[in-house]
Image (tube, rainbow, N blue to C red; front, side):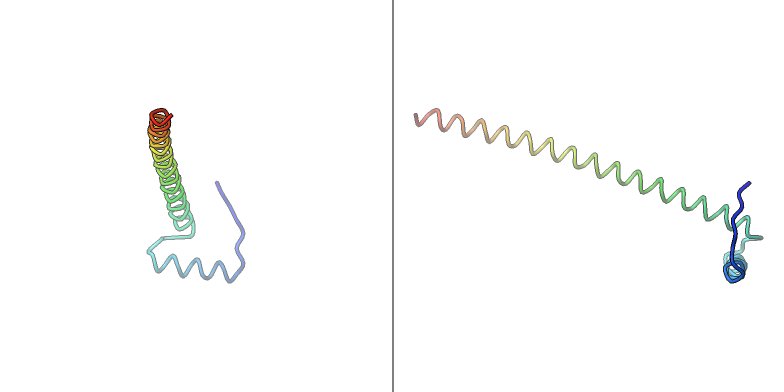
Length: 81
């Protein structure tokens, strides 16, 4: 069980919102709101992991390209000496 306090004004706004979205009571509204919040957080977490993974791939590709360029420069310097 979870409980929290609301001011009179907050309570009235929440009750009015229940009617707007078709929630039967504040408990249902709170459950739906928390579920949506948790789902949004999970999507954000997934998005962050995907972005980090993409950055890892880019860094790996850049490192490989730098290595290739370094080898080319080394060959060029070796030929001119």
